[in-house]
Length: 553
Image (cartoon, rainbow, N blue to C red):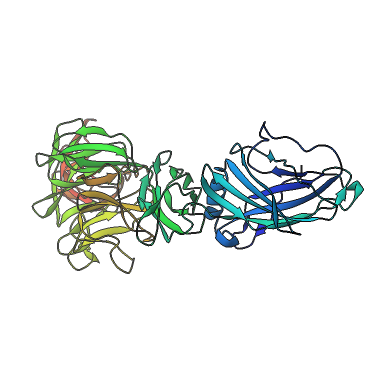
């Protein structure tokens, strides 16, 4: 049995699957085939021993008319077609008079490693024959070969060249001739597929004629642009890791269609039917975390989830914490920024000491001392209402900050990213976007869906599966809380304060955002301590009254 042979197809840059067939001629003609196909039919008679003549055509699978496969997916479609073959028709003609000496149909087992055919033909040494093969699935033709010219060469026995010229290898094409050979297009559905890692979905290919009618039972090849993101087998796509890729479906004739595959990692909070839900962004079972909810907000480490209910911010398992809307948690997890009637208010994470801050709406912490706000444009402003600067002009709203500091926003219903030129990433947007942890995706409400949008702009936005009518998306962060500043006292003004008189305590680490959080503890003359309230505070000083019980200096 000859070994399988590989022939490179340069346009594909891979070896298209080869089928090796050996035809042996004795006082009878014996056809022996070695392919990814069937075993010897039990009812076939093997040629009787005697003088043997042999040749070995080497077959390759191609598209119609011998056109080489132009892609891995087309090669896969041709393989898929051949693996369906369960019958062969062989026609052998004597060249001298064009008489048909063999016309036989043979049943085979699809998917076996090899098959052997033998049939009787009288042959003289050096007599010439032509052989054609046609492959079928049932009554459906799949492949056909051109006529193969066979010259009987004397050998001692089949496969043994000691008595003559030996086996001659002849390249022969098995050209696809099956369903869809006259098709003009192929479509894939859906054209966008959103998955989570380790989850799967199905794509379907439909092969069409020029008049729009469909072909059935067409073998299809599937390939993915990035196996590290998603794999595909027979249209079933499995998510591997976070990323964006395309899956291509190809017919045996080389027609192609493509679908975008979005593999989105991470958890997402959102509101559906008034309830706060959490599930995998790319799909999965949802967990209800609260009712009558809106505007979910995570702590920066993802450890706590808050939302608005009844006009106040609350934890998912607790009572109301602070009045306001659009909550955002500070980088160190100790404070809220919320909106009240067009002004930012700050409060401790337990809701205490609510303090008015700068004007603006939809606050988002930018760093430990500044927030992003909207109100005709997106501005960055310090918590004490100083240092206001423009981030995005032109009726921009709904700011969202990535973990790396990139800012997204909405303008005239379009989703934009600061520093990215060109058209909006998505139109028809309602509400604030949310960044994925790795900064590759934005999720935002648009129409009746939550849409995931590649920040790269390489593909259009796609609806998250199973979230029709959902709003208020919030990706769960996976970072850590920033460290709170350490309080350091470096001196006083005046340098030697007097009991009962105002004094400025100099240093760093003071909570200048919420002054009520600062208390000065003084040692008294009798060895105890006494506290004093703070009347004003900056980043480098706070003003208080030195208690009378404290010794001067």
